[in-house]
Length: 395
Image (cartoon, rainbow, N blue to C red; front, side, top):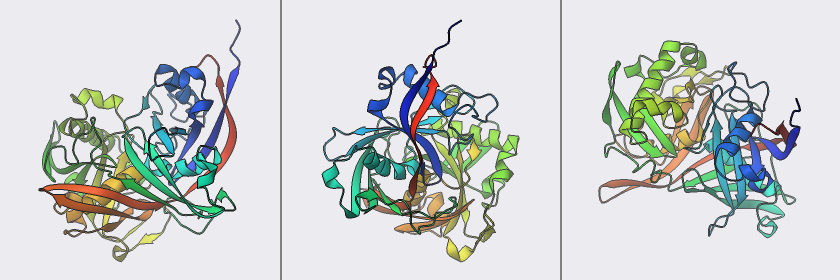
């Protein structure tokens, strides 16, 4: 029986923020994978090594976690005022699907550096030395991201002294502006889809919870840690090694997704694992991060822990950080209350790996809250470039 040879596809393996993923230029994908559909999904799954019943992704580029089971497709933009279009695919680890329902804020930091290195940004826009601002159209959610990249000798400077908790080594700072981050469009609705900054969320079999459900950066359900029986200082093992806790969070997520109008029935949540996110908040208090770093109560405004793809995230998703910054800027949300209440333009929160600061510009117009931008810093680095290979009959 003859077997198909492997197909070789140009690709770049990159770290962006606290995530890693495989990056492609759209034009380099096989023709049948250049358009959305089963062939593209199958190709990306095979690249990453999914679906894998062992949940290890040994036969692919994935790292067996939500932070490392990611793919990105970038192309020159035909949209006025933008340099590139960016599409993010979250590849499920042990089941056969790719979730296209949201963005990855961490990998957003790597899109600009990749685009410049891949020749997708006009060379005349890149200075010999200085800062290059790359305008990115985030195609999953229809939003604009502006990445401000340090340039040295005509190339993106990747090394530096910027430290990001959750990343072992320092690198160059990449400043990101998420413009008009609220309102996820036709899929997500308004910033507060229920019209309230706090709701009572009824969850079958678990009872009711106070919740802030917000569309900003990524649809997110915020809960109070104390209402869940947690302190807000939990590290991954406290949640991820507790099957009952994971099932509880997934049930809450499914009911919240229905309440937010993202799905019609809780049974649909299994096919929409990337969104919404679930996070729980608590007032500032000292704790020891996963690295052993001591986080003082004076270093933060509140503590936040967030679930991603069914597991507690080791740090904080970039898009969830946008949601945190936005919610913190709006008085009355659970995030704002945990941070001490009142309006603010920036918040520093504690997560399992350390701390992160994010800013948001919010204002009230005709009784409705709007956010014009959210700002945070990440870092990015090319880890490997060349080609990935997949069996030719796998997509």
